[in-house]
Amino acid sequence: MLGSGEVISNEAFQWAAHHPSGVIACAKIMRFMNDIAAFKRRKNKGDLASSLECYIDEHQVTSKVAIAKIDSLIEDEWRTLNQARYEHSSLLPVVQRVVNLAVAVVLFYDGRKDAYTFSTHLQEVIDNLFVKPVPI
Image (cartoon, rainbow, N blue to C red; front, side, top):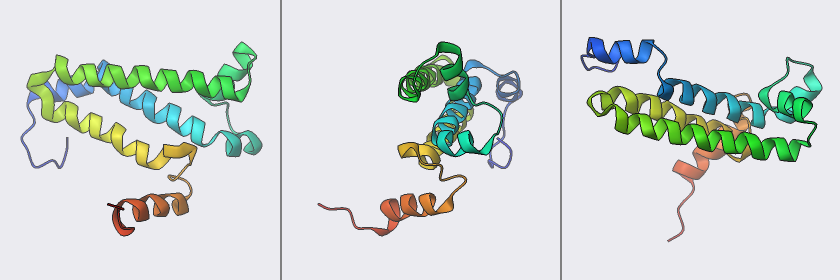
């Protein structure tokens, strides 16, 4: 909201500051996608357990099953985020910024690659979007 060039109402600021379902859904999407993309690297590194590792340990399932479950949680959070767009139509410019943040994170973690940590993956995404010709 800051630096948006628009005057943000007090109502919009209060909506964003009090962690509504849309903001929380965006954060969960980002966390879950990061956990899936970094799963193999993190497993060897010895970091704190991710949501994926916690699910595997808690339910005694394979990583494939856990990834499928986390994917379904991501889908649920997308529904929550989209619902927030319709529940707060008077705040749509602010809600849309939250949605745009969640959409942007897909560029970094799509295809289970961690382009946030490894910029070579991001270079591939940028090349595919803007450099390589689109077949017609």
